[in-house]
Image (cartoon, rainbow, N blue to C red; front, side):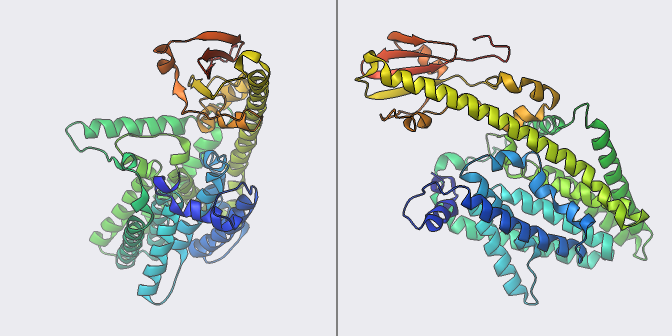
Length: 449
């Protein structure tokens, strides 16, 4: 359950929204509410960073929603909306302002705890936005004292938020999800390998069609960062202050990149799925912010050129949506055929359980292979390793208990029983009063493995 994952507010949210003690499906109402709140949060972030809202400044913050990796979070029927709520809470924790430091820290801490209780990985978003805000503060005021005070303020908010979360929702987390990285003699090598894996996944976003655009945007961002350093060294600060301000900017840039995997690097078993790389959104915001600083040197209207990379992200989103449609169509077809055979086969009329055995593969969707070849990140973001989940069969009339899904290795160690059904996608065996459905591994070229 979400509660056992330390995400207590997810259960409370769906129970409250449905006015029930359970979590009935009320989609798309949660997503609509999440989108409205997210838009409001982005509006406050624009005003916080720029003090004015223009078309160009609005474009800077849009990667928080448009990030290709965030698509995987939004694909989850229940988790997607609540993840968006968590990100919105992190944004408000950054932007909330009040003359009373105590009230400001308390509200921001509660907002961070709320965000973590929706999804722990929103801490990556908060840290990334702190880096953006810190570079903006240095760039605007060129004051070491103000920059250090801002850093202290950010750290206090984060510490208080984590503390409140640990004392509340985290108490329900099961032990298996608490295993942290062991700092033994091999930890540095393992950490380097995990970071390399992260970089390789980010590199999947680059392909022949957008290589020039990515290179251009990164070049603009690099020029924007150099422009910030130039302003620091041309300021009236002492040499030590200029050195410290430059160091703050360099560290903020490095931390923003490390925040892409962020919290995932802390745990013993590194999970590199796109939905955990939430810091990618804020790193893109930083890239856009630095790029805009260069573009607007020729006038505010030049900032509108950020529409090009956003359009590329939007095109990726639509391509991903088409792949999801193909996946759903294939999934529905297989569920329909399997349910029909389980219900109509006379030898299976007395079964008491249906045991699923899944092969883990990324090659189920031959119809999308062309798009995945052109845009390699589609396969990574899709992250669907099985053709169907057993719960889908109950929607088609197969009303029997479903034991936990087993792996193909487990099936190889069992007495296989009598095979009753054989086709391209699965085989069905009868073991006493259990129907064992063994899903096959279908390669992209249609061959069965």
